Length: 270
Length: 327
Ligand SMILES: Nc1ncnc2c1ncn2[C@@H]1O[C@H](COP(=O)(O)OP(=O)(O)OP(=O)(O)O)[C@@H](O)[C@H]1O
Ligand SMILES: [Mg+2]
Image (cartoon, rainbow over all chains, first blue to last red):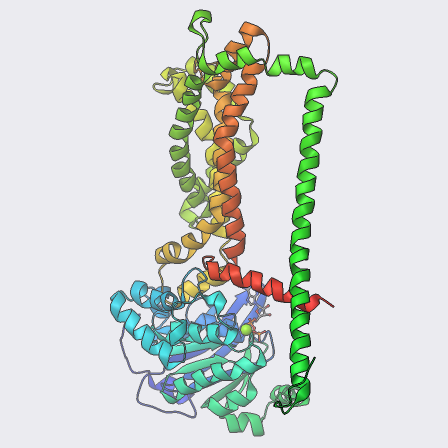
């Protein structure tokens, strides 16, 4: 991925209703289609993320949130439509997956830390190998980040000795140690015990305040309402509704959104 | 129990003391619980040992058995040789087995890696080689080594293929071992690589590693842990199968030497000696394999090396568990 910052075309900007900004969009996905075999998991998804946006993807299980995130950093290839990141079309034959992923971090639901490496090595692997940063420099930076998120004394531990919340914070640090311009968070609190959720969400909140552009799939509705600049409701592989948190959570228009929010309220999650 | 007038809560001292005796009783129970299984296993070992010795000494036919398999003179002459009777010492032949093993093993380890990589590759360009590799592994694993030995020893010299038809029997032996064992070892490698969870590959890609960086930093280090124990198993098996190489060839390894010795006395003591030599070579290896496997099971999920502290804490938690379970 080059650092080219070609401004997005006027078409692209007119499509975005809410934000018209001079910088190129971080994510500009248009009519994205993704199939697994016969099943169409994403059906014509159009999504825009501007710099410093925090966009929440909400929706029922199986609605395609994870799939959409993985398509954005080329962990999955799309079957139709177009995705541009920072003004660069991902379909371009020059675009290589690993180059895209050096600019787009992702944190998984299940942490996926490397069990054979200690916390510090987990964090420095990307910078030293993929970005060829000097080991000393990478380690200093990693220690800075770890202390910032209260993990300084865990640097030498192996992942299995950490609590779930600590593991997930390490996974976030591992992702941001690459200094990504976009951070994808895929239900990062779903595998955690309730009392550990807050410490992880605090990290995300801090990143949002620091201006990190983020796209997060989440089932934590209160958090989504709190932290997002924009909320997208996904249903059956389509974006059924998109808007500010206030619009989506207090005055949803689409019947599917209303139904989804009603069921959440009934379950006491909203 | 005397309650001190100075304490505001007279019951606390009583409670303290009773807790203390209870704790003492519990740890005594815990010690007993630990001792009992040890005594039982000791008794079971002793019983089996006595039964074995009695059978060996007094069972019907025990005398003939000892003559056939354990004649003292033959034992001695088999091991050290007897120039007068033209008997070569058997350990000389054993060196041949070790030589076969030491030459074959490195070749197998390298070739098997190649076969495994071909089978693991997903590139369409490799479809042809991949099919060949699959066929080879199926055939090599399906054929008994002895059949391969016959085919190579009697077949290859009859062909007029330049190098292959004029090799020494030692080299033919190496070919046979390599042919059969490369297939097994390649499967061990492959299983090791496939045991690395897909989530780990995703995580590696997510931080921008290229496929080869992923292989070196994520896949291989995790696969190695899984592979070591089964690899040692295959070493052990290879070491034993060097005995088959002598069949119909001029390679005098330990089996053929035992055969020669046996034809002098028409009794089987030499085979016992040969067997003992194999055990001496193989048993340490199998013990290592077991130890590695045990370590592997403990660390596979955690991925961290087992430290003394960890062992201690596992034991401590078992102890506290036992304390809790006591009435
Ligand atoms: N690799 C795959 N192969 C086949 N089908 C898949 C694959 N990955 C996902 N799917 C299917 O795609 C659909 C969307 O999955 P996805 O994981 O994106 O949902 P989600 O919105 O993230 O759900 P959840 O909230 O449970 O995480 C599901 O029906 C799933 O079964
Ligand atoms: Mg998901």
